[in-house]
Length: 139
Image (cartoon, rainbow, N blue to C red; front, top):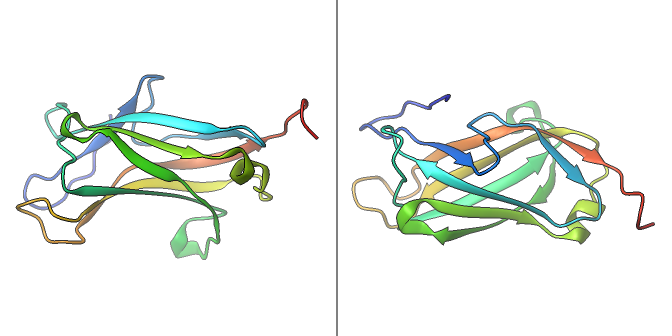
């Protein structure tokens, strides 16, 4: 599983019940609710305690450093922060509004109150590409 090395033994990855790891392509159906449940893991492969950390996740038409425009912001919640379980999601209105077919996305943890790390310390734990699948049922 790919890892991201940062100072002070801070090395996180994430996985989900459908077997994703730190680099992931997403297929999003226009007009559907999109949900991705993940578990954030520490460098030993154990669940990361996300207490004191916020989650942020964004879809762009390209990486931010390539000038990518924001296409959507995920709703992000810890479903059980103490054991690293998180959920990112998009509403049907958000997925229906996606007009660019493809781009980049990532999910980051941002320290708010966790002891031992600077406030604002940020780590990307998932990233990849995305594409839109058109819907045949709704117009």
